[in-house]
Length: 161
Image 1 (cartoon, rainbow, N blue to C red):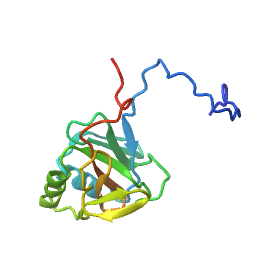
Image 2: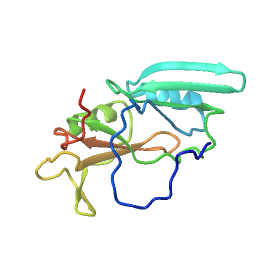
Image 3: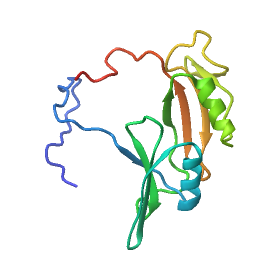
């Protein structure tokens, strides 16, 4: 990897926003059993985008409903330990409905909890403010997911066209 253009400047000056489109498309998860992970994520209702093999490499890609980003996993894709991916967030507009859907699909999902300052407290945010109410679940390898309820985006959280 090249370090061209890297700096050790520690100033607080904020650089201008980039002008080249860069979209996060795929996050690679470390799993121990590709077929088991594929079945799990398909059981969530996620779209299977690809399942390919090139020699010793196998890759599977799935996308959550209406998401612009996908996950991938397989053999020969990452050296990370299975189950080491944590705190991946799935944003939903109705966290109770999303939680119930996952439970109906056989997923063990935590009760709702919310942030109160630095603390995590049982139950939804009392005012149902965006970004504060969560539920968690894991895939069969222990990769950790958070459902996060968002109904109103904070200013600056959407790109202008």
